[in-house]
Length: 82
Image (cartoon, rainbow, N blue to C red; front, side, top):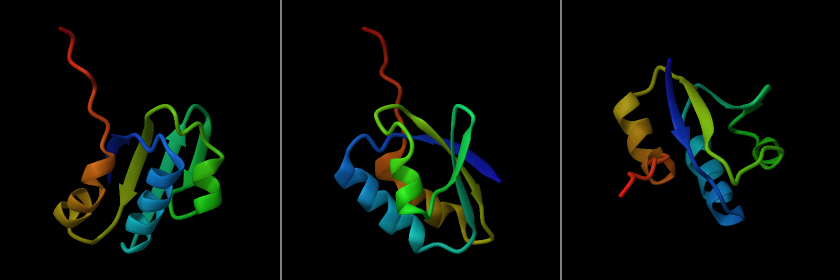
């Protein structure tokens, strides 16, 4: 299992994220506050507050490098001060 933080802060990005995740085998969970949502559920994605970073838990036997390459545009990068 691997956990990463993602940011899908627009309708278009959420649709692209759903399309990317649907390509992979395995379980993908989105966690925000007390909610756990199947990341392959487009309706589930829109039930979250997409304006804030969301934790993505990845449970897959596929190559983690391949998955990380696919979700790279959605990874949350905290702004550096200054």
